Figure: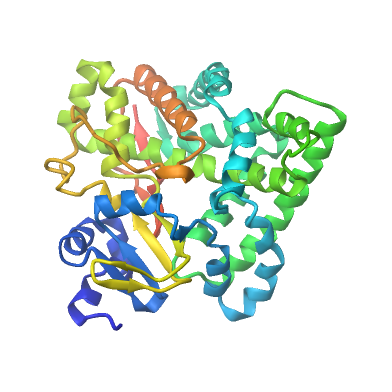
Length: 408
């Protein structure tokens, strides 16, 4: 199937400048081509709310898409990536049932609501410490000084990373996120991924060895104890999923914090609503998740041929489920292109859906709420710094400010 000339021109991946605002294109496809084959990538894109919701739980689609990533890298880098790809297949988000459910149960031991409640004090302390650094200077970068460091440092502490190594985790995460979300995959991004993945695997194995000899009640310590039990997770599963949570758990939160701040400050009426009633803060977070999700799409692999709206998706093809489009589907959200923190948001899919729904969604919401409540309380006259440029971290799969200069 070839791409129609008009449809190809409309598709946002044909013009990377459109990543700043892909929503007109998403609307066009949602209404005219809700299932679209993008020939340059040999991938399908699904845009409608009901289809995305259903496919997240469809057993004909697999979460195990690492083989697809290996095939998508430049040929000269496939051998190097292949050496570590099998390790990534241990990630819970790459597993299908029954292995997914078995592994997720063990991960939940160290990543459950009770455990995250115990982190509230640490989140608050970290938020205050980061704001203390900038309080007297009257300006800050909401992303680099706050939104990026807060979840990165908190998750590193939660997992048991040594404090002096937290900045290494930050750099590793950037290399991973760029590989999995910049389309098409480049030789440079692949090499950076292989290098960072190798370093991080070795580092995490060393941490796990420390927990075996010196048990602690952190996430890695809990899993080290579970490893020794019959049927417990293997070393590769623990190492791989500790890496996954360190990597995936803070970039999305950075994006979410920055998106909330930015959207409120460019919508004075909504900012005024929040200043009048701080009880709207959680609503503001949920509306941002809908309107400007930090993760915009999640891929799956077809396990068999399937028909969808008259299209045949072939076994082995990648299917991209567009969260950003589904969250603005007019059949589920009234006036969806309007940012309204008083909206009753309904069910958004910004943390995925179904058996692979984000394990850390509760913690992500908790971190974001505390971070924003602290920021807005301590700096009530916050505004954008109009003398400095806002830079965006926007690729096919992520949306958030990389630099968000503020004055207060």
